[in-house]
Length: 240
Image (cartoon, rainbow, N blue to C red):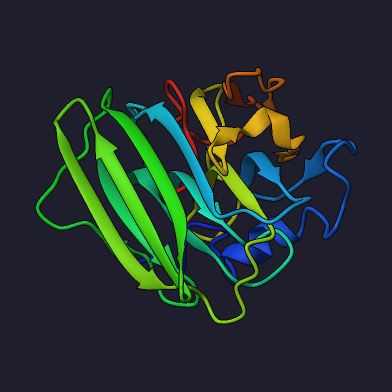
């Protein structure tokens, strides 16, 4: 997996990406705007676990370099911490590159070794706080039948005050990169063992994306628009 500034905003860090949406905003408030991220964040409680599933998008690449990610994480909405795991679908030199990773800020993301991800794979990602400042990040590919689990100390200053299910996209400069009309559907999204919908989560979108209302079962679709970007967003693009 290529080295980048980082998927969570491709600027200054995961939390910066979500913090832009607005700290301590009631979950029932209007949609929050973010430069690169689309999804939902639970922000009104203490969260010790988050999980969701999706089908890995298959991307069709042009000449532009773009990075798309699909992930779940704890922290990052109201603070500079973040513990997360997920997958990506990148376009580099006209070629689709897929990967699976985990990340604890401020360190860069780390690829899971000895596994591959392909378009069409069904993934489930889970992040759990297990106490003593430790978090477990698990990614399960039911299509290829592999599971990767990492336990790591959390970010300095972690608070467990938010839980996110997100897709992101940037180009090589850090600008939004996943446009062109794609979508990704997250299913079975949960926080603290209950449905994400029950946590009254904040919807997060960009200027060129939308999310559908989240169902009681924790399903929603993030859709990128068509306002003139490039984007291998088929069928569901997000950032790197």
